[in-house]
Image 1 (spheres, helix red, strand yellow):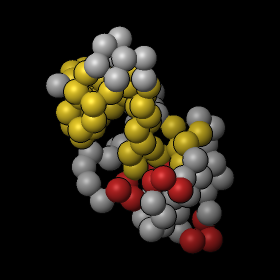
Image 2 (image 1 turned 45 degrees about the horizontal axis):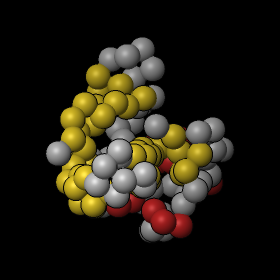
Image 3 (image 1 turned 90 degrees about the vertical axis):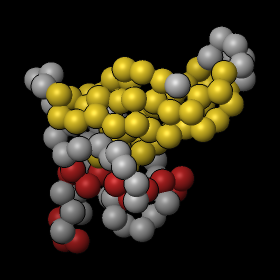
Length: 111
């Protein structure tokens, strides 16, 4: 879990955003709050060529309580020794998005 430098709903493509672990200062003049900047980034590494279709992720509060879960579509062949990073936030217009209040997440399954 982390943040992107441009808030969700801004119309900026995820590829134009920078994932960061430190919380940004929300642009309150435009009505954004910190939850607008929340994002999930997943890095996938493999030891042999692997077709990864999707990952099942669970989001938790800072106290460890589960908030929600969902499936992140990957749809990539990842080759031996390769590591690919994927970032999701609300501006992608598809579920799941990092829920408000999420502090951590865990990958519980992949296919």
